[in-house]
Length: 327
Image 1 (tube, rainbow, N blue to C red):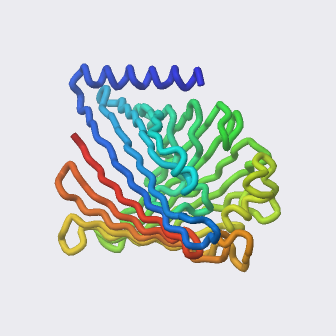
Image 2 (cartoon, rainbow, N blue to C red; image 1 turned 90 degrees about the vertical axis):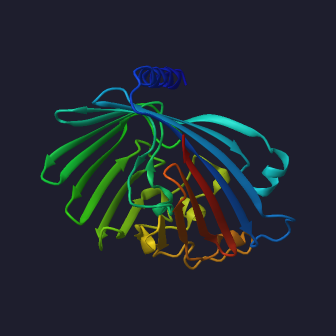
């Protein structure tokens, strides 16, 4: 925690310097509203509940080569109907902060943030493990190694909830005129959390339409892998997520629909969740097909509205509304 506070103070100082120097400072945020509808569990009066979040972002160029960003999150709600009824309180936290610097050899980045394995995904989490977890300090480099190729290196020197000291990730990225790809390997340095491989490939049909496939193979999702760190979640990750082996997700994004400031996307998981499983004591863990629909409309240059519809389980859905703004 001390390391976290020191890094946060450093990021705040960097952003203050950016503001004082009258560089291009941007202040904005996002209001998030989630509504869960779950009709699969019997014997409970209400399985529908809301969740609110308010995210503030401050970012700016400290110099021609250094960029800094800080994000602060305010939350109201919980992970379930019963919790929401008993704990309707606002909480706040530092959600992320980082600084990036450009060098002759590439780009360096440091801070408290999530590194994305599948950057083309919109919302659906392939393998339920789409990012390298936040730690007290994450170090990242991005180095060009040839025409169209770059290599990412990520190191997390401090322990977190889902990684141990010295966890790391390596990724190779390629970008051509109308397609690109990313392949990643991550080692979380925990025997109980295993390792991960991922790939993300996209193809531009035209300047407004994109197809992509993202896939994660997270070793802890295997049916026979024991989850010994949290007995409350079951004996294996498979029992929690219903995923075994590589988990491909197909996606399609269409921007500027009909010449309007309207953008839509769909994501579809090829593997069924809890394939062949029927658990009478927990109907939420029955077989289902997971997908998400998303539509975003830009009202002005500074305001946009986004709506999501998720299939989260058998007779279980989640709807989200997002209002993004820039001052």
